[in-house]
Length: 203
Image (cartoon, rainbow, N blue to C red):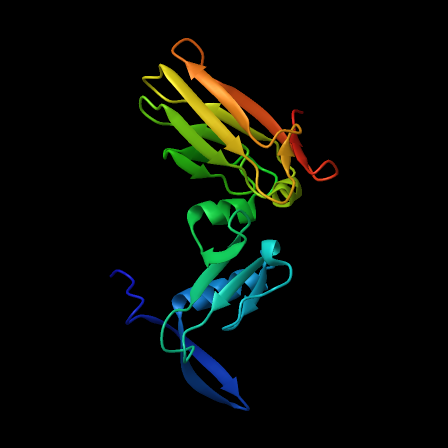
């Protein structure tokens, strides 16, 4: 039997004095609360988004009333500086802040989330690609260098423009960085977030 979140609930027996009372609880809410009890993450439950410790907190927004349906799990996206519905990529960044995290850039315009360690441009016969870097501060907190590589196919002349975000943030004192790939050479660069210089630098 498959799980149906609309009709299937966790059955609970609640001790009230010396009597037992049957209750029900949405499966997702129960699982998130159990993981919090295990100490896996800090948890905020409520209709209002947390405003502190956002990069280390999971936000569970319960249904109204809470027992009627599953709530929604949100994680902080440090690139968008916003709470977003949890995805595998956001969980990877949340649970592996110092590990290897890969991001595939397949569009002409891309935004790299904070915490990524390798971002590969994977396009077919591209001419121009734009990349927006993650927040300098959030990438620094992840303690990861960021390696950007062109792994496209059918390349003849491919210009990749990399742009930082934030007031006055530069890449080695320049407002943008351009990479040029050719048929014989696919470009790449390794960058390190340096808040003391308000810049991305070459490690």
